[in-house]
Length: 72
Length: 389
Image (cartoon, each protein chain N blue to C red):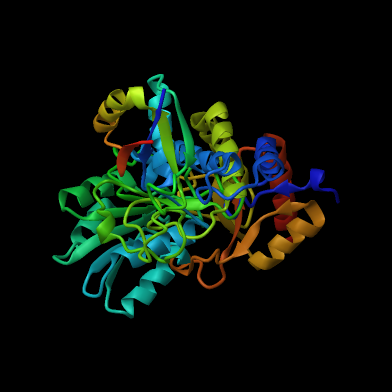
């Protein structure tokens, strides 16, 4: 199993996404943003790569803003 | 005199005591979390951010605001009001307010007036009540904003913000409400009452610690329209030297008061458990008891609506022949009754009530006051008034 991450604009958005995913039973964890993806000092949401499509659909439906989804 | 025997009637300045859960949550944060929210990716930093975000969500739920990211935390309601007023108003704009405002609204407006903002102060009746039609009449072509307190900090008069909200919305303007005296005790529904900006404090009827408060931004306000008061580190978009444009980061620079917000979150939970309606009913009952008792005291003049259902549990009065400061001192020294005297940072309100520049004595009740305390305070007043006559 491999990971993907959702990059967000702020910690507030990360916490919103974490809540959304947990409500839908999607496993996730907040981690520091990997340096190769961004120089931002904040956090991002790590998910299983297998959940990417579901997560993408949930994010579209919720309207929560995010920067992008990336495979690790 | 120990603090147990004191009767604290200064809840409009800040509520005391606080629910014990508030201090417990603050100690737990300092001892077990302590980290800076949103600045690092480790577990304690995320835990601190969780506390801040949970508090945002609870504030949004309490005021029926749809978007928790638009709950902006500030030091107090004064900073929140300054953010809204300085953020929105530009030279040439016209703004309407009432003659019952606190200086937290009046002073920024007077300062903005000297920078080219036009100001109309709508006069309230001598009991502090506002006729919504008078607000409608004051609207001009360049009016952008109406600012009102939800209830007076001097005499408790509740202003008709819902009715004004409808007028304001029909005319395409914005409504800013100063809920310093009402958040947590009167129901506030930003969507139903058409409130576009709501400024609140955490340490009065929300029962949190001092150093907490905020501005809730409704959806009719574009973030591009509302300037930030300050810029700085947000823990987000760190590669850029320009402030982020999204909420809450646009308006929240620097490390927030997480320990205070931990306390505020616990206080919001406490309000939820006890019930806002129950707190209001308790305070109304005590307020009516106080008003009825005061009306039977010779030489005591009451100000405001003098009816518990038309006001918060804040009562202003004077005793013939005694300066307010003298009444306050004697109540404190002889009876352990703590209240506030003078002008209460609201000269315009006192002019409206006819009590400027002498001021009044103010008793303001809270959720922890009891009927026995009101009886003791009334008998102390009776004594003072009889001594005088």
